Structure formats: C-alpha cells, structure tokens
Amino acid sequence: MTKQKLVLSFILGIFTLQAISQEIKKVEIKDEKGNLKTEFSISIDNGDTIFHDTYIEYYPNGKKEFSCFYKKGIRIEKENFFDKKGRETFVHEYIGETFPRIIKTKAFYYSGACRYVEGEMIEKSPGVAIKEGIIKYYWKNMKVMDSVIFVNDRMTYRARFNKKGKFQFENRY
Image (cartoon, rainbow, N blue to C red; front, side, top):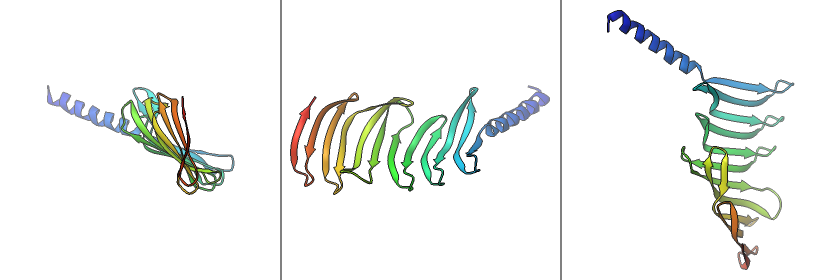
C-alpha cells in the first residue's frame, strides 16, 4: 500500500468514527407550555433508528413518570414507573442482555389490602415476556397474602394466607 493510500485510509477511518459518534442524538419533547414531557437518546444502527441510553417520561407536574435504560435498542438494567406524587409503583430489573432472560418485578401499592408484589418473568424476545415461577402478594403488614405459581404464563397454584400469615386455602389449576 502506498503512503498516500495509507493516509487516505486513515483519514477516512477518522471521518467514519466521527460520523458514528455523531449518530447518537439526544431528543427532548416538550408540551404546548414548554414543559419537558420526554427525553431520550437515539442512534442509527444498520440504518435503523433505535433507543440508546436513558429514556425518561414526565408527568405534566414535572415529576418523573417512567425511566429506563437502553443499550442498542434493548432495555437493560432497571425500568421504573412512578405515580403522580413521585412514588415508585413498579420496578422491572432486566437480568442479562441476551434472550431469553429474566425480569425481576416489584409492584408497590399505596392503598388497598395488597401493598407489595414480587416475582419474575421470562422475556423470550424484546417486549415478549411471560410469567414464570412464584409471584408473592403481600398484605399491608408485609405478611404474605398469596403465593402463586405460574408455569409458561399460566397460573397452576395459589395459596392464600390471612393477615397474620396463617394458611387459609389453596387452589390448583
């Protein structure tokens, strides 16, 4: 390779790297009053526009409604949902970046008999998840209310406990 071709290849390589790094773009969407509604980053991957990095949605009062993190269009780490008061209502924790993968879930309720739920899902492909394993529902005093077993997104067993944690009944499906 001649010196001129080598220099040209090097320069083209630099321009290509700069073009790739410039492909990540931060986007902000505002409502008619100018308040921030959504902010996220996108990138171009093989000609497709995909989410990359932090994604956040806001309520009209400015409090965070939803947040998650993307890596090359795939949700990773934690996904959080909030109520209008800013309290966390749901958390999905993505385990791994390849499919199938586990999503650990938690739900927080601020009224009613059931106040907390935890369990797991299996995400077979992006956005396609099924319930799998044990999901536990808790009373306000954090004693187990229900323990439910799911197999391939189908409820197969349920055990109910009273507010003191004493077994009441079971259902097999």
